[in-house]
Every structure is written in structure tokens, then in C-alpha cells.
Length: 371
Image 1: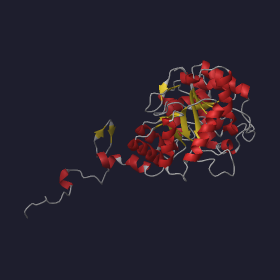
Image 2 (image 1 turned 180 degrees about the vertical axis):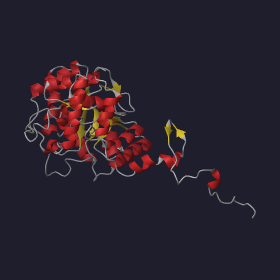
Image 3 (image 1 turned 120 degrees about the vertical axis):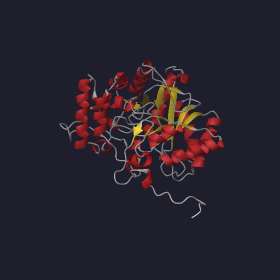
Image 4 (image 1 turned 90 degrees about the horizontal axis):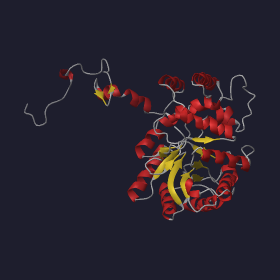
């Protein structure tokens, strides 16, 4: 599947490329990342390949990431409408100011105006709440987002890094009040982060949210460059975010990724991304790159088809531990369906617990029956 085979984002008509270009690495203000010129070359190549979906945030490299994208559009004469430009609010850029961050009306509108200025555009295609703000009523956040949509400054809205119960509450409030609905969910999802399969992914499917996973390669851990052999010698730019994931279980997974990469004449990064693309509900994983070669290797995952056996091997190595009641629900089929098949799922009887005949069922007397 080429990068220019577009998909609609959630329950909307917005067409996006099957990979989104993440730009947290645009700018070197955090001590790592790509220069403005390198960033523009990466954007050039992404667009040449057919990509149209670009993700940033007001906080990335202290606002420099947004500015780099804005300069690209304005200085290179790129047609703004061709891009689906997404950015985020929530993070504070002004320490000491209590209203400089969060999801209240004041901070959100101020953040939006500043993002529009840095991006050098008069509208944002997709505006994300970067994280749940527990200090702000969700009604206030959704009302303010609806106002931005009504004002034409934002086209679509989405949530990132927010619990499923809060996202569902927000979506239902928007639905019943006739406000702009959420169309997308941005969450961490990879072979090394699958706990989202408990509530967030099923919720997204139920509420019509397109899922754009961030860090699909777990900060580069799944790229293949981290191995047992060079353990402790890693040049990990993001420090603890990467090194905390490097353990024997991870190295076992990397060994398996390397085996499948050899079987498919591919790379561990492509295999990891192909696995994720295979997951139901995933719309457009967010890929980052500091070099064009990294971008091209990631995009090539769209042409990689894993066999059911290869997918199963990876699945079995990374089974997530989910919160209650998921294990209980998974075992509930036998006493719910009792030896019947429903929607293709067959469940047996609980030996010694289920009645073996209808005569064994205590039904009680009929209401109103004479004695």
C-alpha cells in the first residue's frame, strides 16, 4: 500500500495518509533532533511520496517545531490546503504562569492563537488535547473546542493521552449538546506498549475515533539498533525513556524481529510497523525521522505483509497485562453462552457447575399458581 493510498480519519471524511509524519524531532532545542534545513528535506520527501498528514505540538522544541513547519509552507510556496496539519495544546511554555497550560478556555485559546502564528496559517486541520487536564471540567474543554471549530480556526478535534472513561464522557457530552465531536485518538501503541488494547482501542472503535499511534517503534528501541551486544553502550538521546525499556524480554523480542526481518528481506523497524498496521482500529501511525533514510525505511513498511504465523509469533511474545475485569470477561463465555456458538465463538460448559439437563434447574413455582 503506497503512502498516497489515503484513509479517512475516524468517523469523518478527512483523508489522511496511512502514515503521519511526527515532528517532535524538528529543531535541536532539546539537544537532539534535526536542523531546520534537514527537517524541510524530510518534509519534502514525505510529501513527494504522497504523505499529507503532519503532526506537531506547541511544546515540541519550545515551539520551534511549529515554526519550522510554518516556514516550510510559507517560504517554499507549498500549498497549505494540501496538508492535513495537526498540532496540540495543553503544555505550558511559560513557567510560573498557571494559565499558560492545561485545557481551560483561557489557556487553550491563547495556545491556539500562538500556534497559528508560528505555523503561519489561519486554521488548524486537527487540534489535539495533548493530555487530560484533571483540573478543568471536560464540558469547558469541549465547549471551547467547539467555539474554535465554529470560528473556523480549527477543522477537527481529537484527544491524546486521555483515559478511556474521560474520552467517552467528552464524546457523549459533545453528542448530546450538538458540539463538534472527537474524530481521532492519539495514544502510545507498539509491540512494547499494548495495554491500550484493554479499553482505549475498543473505545475508539465504538465511538468512531481514528487511532494515530505515537512512538510505534518505542523511541527507536524496535528499530534494531539496540542489541544485547551493545547494551550499556547505547547513545540514547532520550535517556531513561529508552534505557528503561531495554531488558532481557525486550532483547528476546528484538531477536525475533531480526529473524522475521531476514525471512521477509526487510528490517526490524518495518516488521514492527507492519505488525501495528495489521491491528484493527489503527488508522495512521506517527513516524518520526531525523534522516531521510529513516523515513524511507519506515514508509516501506506499507509494502510489507506479514504472514499469520509471523504475526502470531510477535503477539505471543508481547501479550499485555490488562486491568480487571478483562481476564474475567475473557473467561465469562462459558457461563454466558453455555455450550452454544454465537457470532462464530463457541464456548463449552463449566464442568460440575452447569446443569446437565433442564430437570436440574431450580426454576421455582409459577407466579400465582395454586398450591
